[in-house]
Image (cartoon, rainbow, N blue to C red; front, side, top):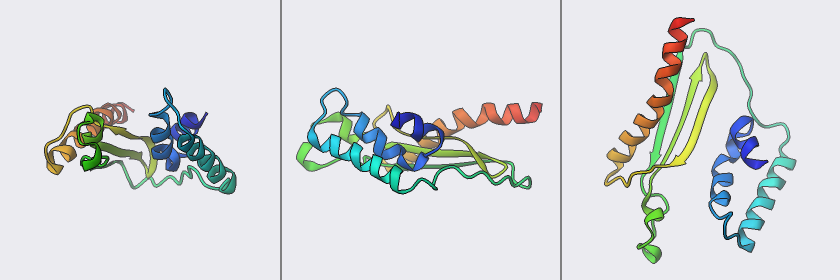
Length: 137
């Protein structure tokens, strides 16, 4: 249910939902508390969510960012999942977001520049087909 909300109308909870979903095979009390906190946020903020205001002067826009090895800590440096970078992007058409994503990269980046390059590549894999579709229409 939370994944549906995060992917359809409430993108601001996507990161928190993803982090709790990573531990669905071995949940702990802290993960249950995190899910309850997300639920309280949704109940307390029913007026937030996607608001579409069309601006016909804008075309296709892609916003991309990467977090280089954001989960790394010296306490658990042997865990390979901790060194994965995170990609986030939003693709907008006419000022309205049509695709957005926040996910861990599958490759281990060796620098911030490499993490940003991987993020740009992932975003453009989504944006190029939309650009071609817009040209056909």
